[in-house]
Image (tube, rainbow, N blue to C red; front, side, top):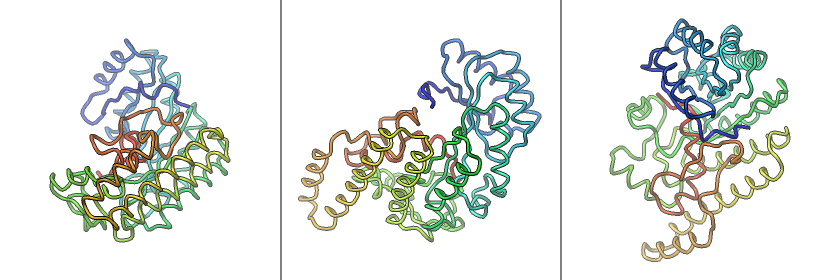
Length: 340
């Protein structure tokens, strides 16, 4: 799909005027032919803001592909406006849940599923090249069935709309609740139980040897164990779904299956080591496990040919943490909306 995703250039529309965004587009196109990712939904600045930007963009005659985000439903005329302004474009939608009541609490796509589907159909009918649809695990009011049930809804999208330009993804909200977000500042209101509050507590979590043990929260309905189990189940099902619908080649699919199984095994073995050893013996066994598992940075829940925003893992953490933590690769955390 996006062969040049590592070249995406990002600009926020929160403070930039349409003219400033156009200046940035000119700068980017002066040195890059890669896709240009406009971060945030342009309509956050109002319809007139978006219309002005696309009017100016149409005058630039840019060949680069553009990637736009949507935080809510959009009518056909929005995509008609985009299609007139650019040669090629793709969309990123982050409904995060297939359940309207959860989306309402999240504050994004607080509409019916039918409205989301109508938006997707309108984009596809007006020149959109690809639509990535993101779901998350660990949301307010979400139980285990809700978390893995997003895969069933993804299957509905792929079956009923029947267009291989739709590509669904799923990932956990991890490793932390975003400090400063409403969920972090008022966790009880969102149904979260924080496991870390201070900077030091977060630093200590980053030293843990598995992504499960890094998680800074649980919810009313999901323990750490539930979040991890739901992540692996949903990831396995989502990737099989994409394979069955021709969105993944067999080699990529088999590779993801193997990596998920290895990652799950490592998380379980880390837990076992913690439960059955003394601190001194624990370090020795963790080191041995890290040496036993090669290529720790390659474990992910999506194929590398799908997501080309490569990262070096989660900050400077131990080997095993990066093995489990790569499942939370930066591309997901950058591209999936947070509780903010």
